[in-house]
Length: 124
Image (cartoon, rainbow, N blue to C red; front, side, top):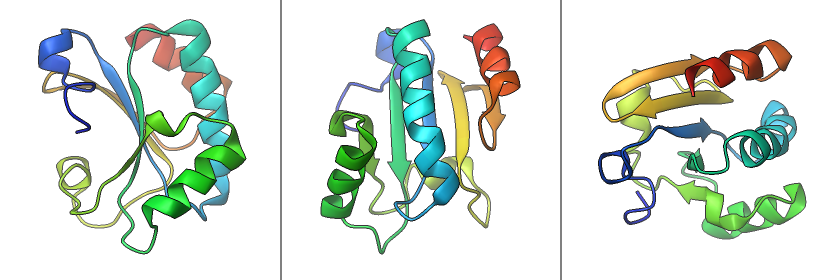
């Protein structure tokens, strides 16, 4: 995924993934909130927003990141679904936030609120 940036084996630390698509209304709320939270509380833990939807182009994602004020470097287009297949069996659920450390799941949440952020804090 995006070179070595999100290779937890080399970084020996957890990372956070958030699955979204550009027309997901809850994602529009969640992405800036999660980005702000991670930037403020866990700036050294990689955060990646992943779009596995075929209809969303890289250009759509670029406009989306600009609209939300979140750096484009945090977005990844999962063209072949190779990343999403590791985390979803069957139907996608948006938004979904996943914490991973190597091959270990740390957490999995759908949506974001203060309680979710408190739980993320405990896991990271």
